[in-house]
Length: 258
Image 1 (tube, rainbow, N blue to C red):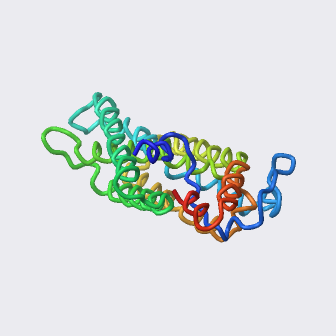
Image 2 (cartoon, rainbow, N blue to C red; image 1 turned 135 degrees about the vertical axis):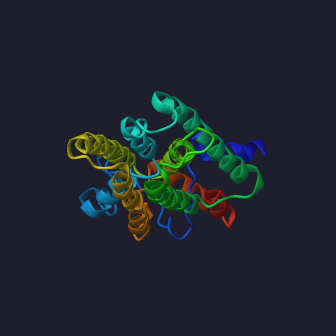
């Protein structure tokens, strides 16, 4: 329905999948703009978890693919046209993400946490597999590398359409911390690309080094889940939770889990 569609993060509505129990205690206001109850801004482990969360899902994977283009295009059938074909493939990744949005909105709700974890795992798995298959070609094209570009486009658009709206449930400072982690990691990838030219690191080693880093956000999500979310939720999320509780019965909880 139209109402269900506008509750989806694609339209920048946060998915407040928080239960009545975790939000018990009423609305709290931020203290000096840095949260309250648990004083999360003194918890360096929590801040680090949000920083690492910026690694994946993000546009880091497509960036990593482009970092390797100067090396791979030397033997790729596309030659200097490889990057152009990759741009087309990355845009096709949007189709996969939009398919998720449509299924989640009109067919059956998909838990956002589970979807994020799934994207993290498959992107890491594909990255590891790419280390052994990036040279495979068919029909005069680097099919494996282009398929990975589609996957990279899916991960990047998933960040924009699902992951970032999901993060709006958290304090704005923590949202910014996730984005900072994304920027730092992309910078590291660029630096590694320059180092690669100096020490002759092969693309297969590069992707094998990249793959495990893509799994690190799973540890962040686990650590964040062990904390009391009320200590670092955004004021809007807390207000929505309180509004749901005041409606009585199970109505409020139902609204929060939409």
